[in-house]
Every structure is written in structure tokens, then in C-alpha cells.
Length: 407
Ligand SMILES: [Zn+2]
Image (cartoon, rainbow, N blue to C red):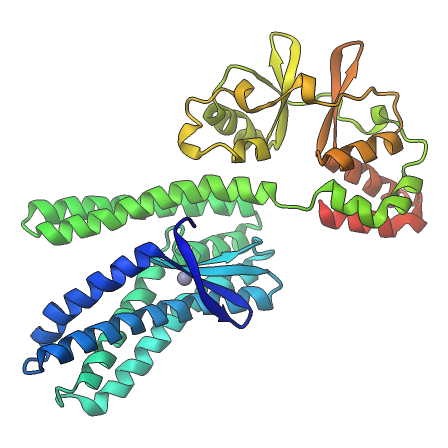
């Protein structure tokens, strides 16, 4: 996240703070010191209000941090690496580098956050009970933390992406249907319905006289709506983009792989009907009508019936989302001059180092200047699997396993 700096490390996880967090800390301290505490606890000195306001605001952020740490610890325990935690204007975000591998893992990972907040809230509530009516700063701080943590837990359980509740809902649908992309679509739709309910609720409050509440609720709805829309697209893109490059695999298994692929030609493994897209459509159209619709990760770009280049998901990732609507495919694709085309007769063993060295996942296959297919890393993996399934080349299963893992 731009504008963030590191404040430390907890159990090997970097903790970053975004500058927007400091603004919120100041605003929160001011509103607590001049509004919340003087109203609920009259009679303290001005200095006490400010000190208590500042401590409470800080402890609220500690609570948010604990919520995020809970997500991160469960993720790491389940084998998903955690890059860092960033605290920012809306709270915190854990940057977990891989998607959960099963609905159970996703459920635990998502649910533990709100659970932590609710637990902190409950503990603070119980601790302030004996102090009730003492009008002491400690009572004030504990009561404030009880209220905010319970709200934090409940708010995060709203079933809309990217809130934890959206994740929980996603994992439940995934578990029931057994289909992850189906779950993503359904959870995204539910999230958007909830976002619209907030927006309409906000508008209704606004026109019935609750102007500030209306604006606030409407704003939350708008935030949920834009976040759920981008989570849907990004989630699809990111899970498709994840994976190790051929180059890394080659370093480990070059020898084994080469003997497994001896005598195999490009023509035997290539996809003879590669997906093609026109060069002049926008990236948005490419994503909506080709990549997402047909689950593609790359396509040959055609200008009339001539090969103009190759477009992949990682090329699109380098273009900011706002520009997808008006950026044409041929501006982002790898043009044909820079593509290393191969012929169907070439041996796979000659071609693989080329893929590894240039770190590409697919190569166009060209015969007499006409594209006749595409050779992809996935196709090679599949080829190896089929051979293994048929019992061919069993001693090479080690290489296949490693290759498979990387895909
Ligand atoms: Zn959370």
C-alpha cells in the first residue's frame, strides 16, 4: 500500500502503518476527548479527557491489530504465508499471499477475526462491570473498548466481500456446492445486494431527517459496493495468476524432465485450437467477454487473420484498472516481433529451455507463417500426467510431481 511505513515485527510478521491511520488516530482522539468522554463521564479535567481519549484511540488500533493477527496466525498455521499486516483508515488488512486451499481453511481464517474482536469486547465488558458508576478513566476506557470491539466484530460479520462475513459466506457456499468459482460469484452478488441495502437505507434515513446517519450508512454501502466489485475481479485474476514460473521448476528438475520429454514434439502437446481475440477490443471487454467467460489465461491476438501478438493475464495486471475501459489489447500485448514462435516439428526438449530462459508460460506455434496452435505450460503438465496415468515413464514421476506443484 503506498504511503505506508514499517513499525515493527510480531512473530515474524511485519506490521506496517499507513499515513491515513495517523489522520484517523488524531480525529478519533479529538472526538473522544471533546465528545464521547465528556458526555458519558462529566467532571474529569481537560487533560484527563485528552490523555484518556488518546489512550483509547491507541487501544482501539491495538484491538484492530489483534483482529488481523488472529487472521494471520490461522493462515500461517494452515500453510499460507503472510507477508505483512497494514493498518489503514478502514482498520487493518492482512496480506496473505495465497488463497485458502479448502472451504474449511477459509472459514477458520475468516471467522477468527470477528471472533477475536467479540472476545476482546466481552473481556473488556466484564472487566468494567465492577467499576460501574465509579466514573473513573479506567471504566471509561474499558467500556469504550467493549462497545467498539463488539461493533467491529458484528460489522465484520456482514456477509459482503471484502468483509470477513463475505469470506465466511464464500466458504460455506464453497463447502455446499463444492465449486469455488460458483461460490465467488454467489458471494459477490450477496455482497452487492447488502451494499445496495446500506445505500438505500442511508438515502431513506437522509430524507427522514437523520442526515448524518444517512450519509454515514450510505458511505459504508458505497465502500462495500466498490470493494465487492473489485474483490470479484481481482480474486479471479489473482488466483489465476498465482504460481511459480517455469524457470524456477527448470532449475530443480531439468535433468528428469528432459528424459521424460525425450522424443516428444511440440505438435503432440500443443493446443491446436488456441483461443483468439481481435486486436482492437478494450482490456475490459477482453476480460469480461473472453477471459472470465471462458476461464482463459491467455489468447492469441489476431489482426484480420494475421497473428499480431499474445496477451496474457500478467500483461493486463500491469495496467491500472481505471484504464481497462479504453486501453486496446494491441497496446498491451506482446507483439509478434517479440514472441518467439516455435514450429510443430520442434522437440519439446529444445523448446522448454526457451520458455524457462525467457520466463514465458506459452509460445505460439507457427507453420509457414500461419498460427497453428499454442504450447502452454499447463498443456505440458497435462501431457506428463496422462503419460503417468498410462504408466509410461513411471520412474520420472518425481519430475512430474514437482512440475505439477509449480503449476
Ligand atoms: Zn477481519
